[in-house]
Image (cartoon, rainbow, N blue to C red):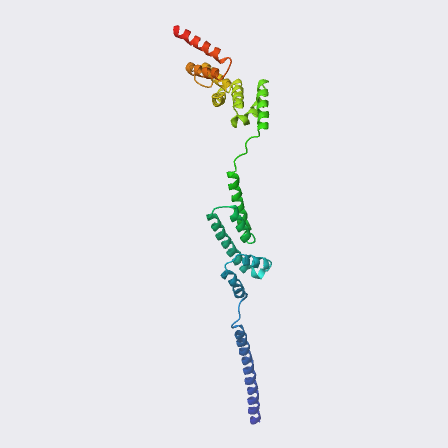
Length: 267
């Protein structure tokens, strides 16, 4: 009985030992196998970095743009897309600085478009805008149309004669500012009639060297102290100028001024 009991215990113990050993061994092997299987594997990020490295090693910009277009909808490459986009912007900026350092010309624009419109369209467009601005600045203003100017001067004169001063001011101002003496005379006459003597004086001064009307008006303004300090000597000077330019009444006005001055001195 004791012998059988011992034999049974030995058999059960052996089975237990064998079973436990088997379980531990399989667990160890499983864990070890998993660890070994992961050795040497690359993460997806590592694969992406290796994928874009050749793009960064080559000097051109268009391959970067082609990569961005090809994988624009691929969320697994978002990190790589950001790096490639940043590198493209850096290269486009470097090209833009190079073109800005040189003379901005039509020929350079052609080359810029040909080489970089695909990848750097905004920089090319900005260069084109600068070139157009420079070209516009260098183009002289076209001379006024003689027929149009003649029509404006006629209207300026007629509106002044009928005392439509608001319409006359609008019509006369453009030609006057462009240097038309007749329009400058009308501006002086209108402003004087409206009581804007300082403005009238400025317009009359511009026209007086060539216009007897403007010179006569200056003489009257100096004689009466309108828009300027009263000065009989300056008035006489401008009346003489007006008479010399053919103004009909300037000589009589000058004679009256001289006579009045002589009477004042006699008193």
